[in-house]
Image (cartoon, rainbow, N blue to C red; front, side, top):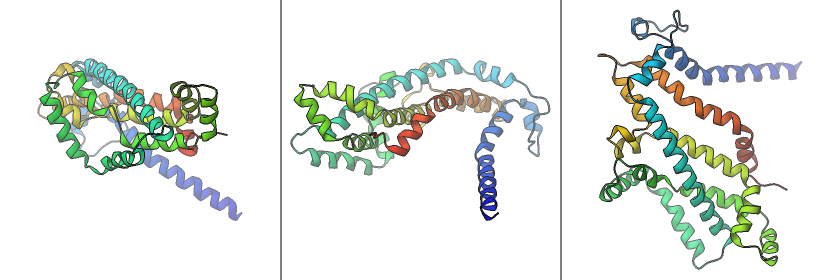
Length: 276
């Protein structure tokens, strides 16, 4: 009976926590199906929509060029994530397996970059991109995000957990470092690599500060810019229902991505990608 009571309170607490976590998503979807007039007429928020409408989703795509912003965000996310994974995998492999002069000192200096505040990095990147005349270009959006000290450190630690005897045996067989990386280390570390990829995709998809700084041409706006425009286009008041409809549309790819790769993500977090 004592164990049953503990189990009951455990699941009841998890149920309440689940409601607390999911409520913002429910409120987002609820608001997205309320009309602009009914939403602004609510002095006390209602937890159901009496006259649901899909007009907000139409407004989200017609008020601003949300489709174009969506495409820009997709290009930015795919290219940035792809380039970053190449840089991160190569750098992590070099620090984990290759021997070269002053490796430990260089890695320590590399890690020290994590101590620099992000605000200073943003300012430096902005000045650099502006001096290179790369504002309002895809290259200007992508270049500052093609590496990550934290992800390199995370993957390096993961690579170092793979037995070094495998590397020595591969070198005896005449295997090149690139082939060993592609055939051995990447497959073994796949859960961690997938986790890093998903985290980077989410980071790029939700990017706001850097795109707002580096672009003032609508042709290069991301969805974050589009949401802000929809919010401000409310005929004297913030158009929250249309903005929420845009957020729902934008959130769908991330939710689908997580559902597809959730097992890999959990495996990468729990085991660090090390097997057998």
